[in-house]
Every structure is written in C-alpha cells, then in structure tokens.
Length: 242
Image 1 (tube, rainbow, N blue to C red):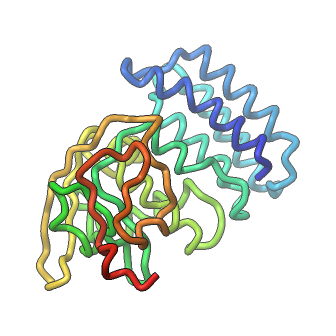
Image 2 (cartoon, one colour):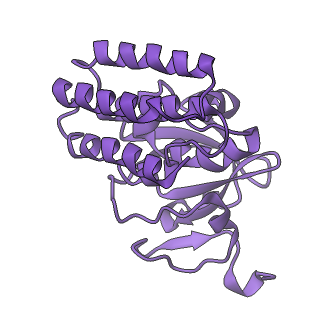
C-alpha cells in the first residue's frame, strides 16, 4: 500500500478516537469519511473485481448504519475493507491503531505454536513465557480467525499484527470477541503446564504509547521511550545471546 494511503486511513481514524468518550461518532462525519475513503480507494489497483464489489457493498452498509456506529467498530470495519486487497501491503496499520484504543499491560508475540507473553508490566510478570489460550472463554484459534480479517496477506503475516488487537479489550468487544470494553479475562498456559485465568484491566488510549512490532519483544529488557517504569521482558539482558 502506498504511504499516502496509510496516512489517509489514519486521518479517517484519528477523529474517531477523539470522539470515543461519547461512544458515538457524528453521522455526518462518518458519511463524509466514507465518501472520501470510497473515492480514494476507488483508484487503487490492489483490489480484485470481487473484492472491490465486496468493499462497495460493505461501505454502503456502513453508511446506512452511520447513526449507530461507534468509533472502534468504524475504524475496525475500515481496516477490514482495506484488508480485502489481501496482498500483505495494502493494510491499515495495526500499530498506529493500537495507540487510539486501550491496551492491556503485556505484550504478545507469535511463535510456532501460539502467542506468547514476552513482555509485561511487573503486576503481570508471572505471565512471562505463558502461551495465550483463550479470551473471555473464546478459544484463541477462534478469536484469531476474526482478528485476521483486519490484515491482508499470509497467515504468518497476519499473526504478526494480531497481538495489537488481542491486547485491546476495546477492539475485541467491537469485534464481538470480548464482553467488556475496559477489561477481559485471558487464559494462559504457563511453562509448567498449569492454566491461569486472569482478568486484566486495559490502560487508556495513549498516542505516545510505544507501537513496536511484535518481534521487538524477543529482544532483552531495554526501556522504551514513553513506556513508563515497571516493564519486564522474558529475556534478561545478561542472558541474551545477541
């Protein structure tokens, strides 16, 4: 996706976060954004004829629902429409989106057999190294299928960006995958095989929050700008082979 396209999608999303306190977006603003989005992507050659038809159908449905659309659902539906190109390049950035919605104080990374906690705030440090099993009673395999619709490309590519959504109860609720917008109950499997259910309250949206990619959490515990104190990584600095 061209850089200008990413900036355009971000510009549509930015007012949504600002309006999130009210829980509703002005219908006129939604329709204006949809019109701009339709015109902009109308000239994007990334979409097949079938994908373009699907996008136009869903944009029309989004316009019809403009009076009741919330900020999270609106932005996520836009992301799903962008992802219909399914080429790995034409995507709405999950990293940028993560700063506009809440996020729990731990970081997940996809590995061969699942999503693992590789970085966490001290209050959740006992979960370092644990594998995510479920969210609010939904198997992570099922949640993953839904979250994958937000990103186009291969399964592995989609997995790289899925944690940004797994870590946000607000986004998960909008997708129908969490009961509450401010917290969710996560089930983990610890290294010793024990299962742990943990209700984790999310931190508020923060445009200055680090938006590093999931591969970053495989590196040692080095403080990140604007991250705040108390964060720990699974891999200590003195144990890192690199």
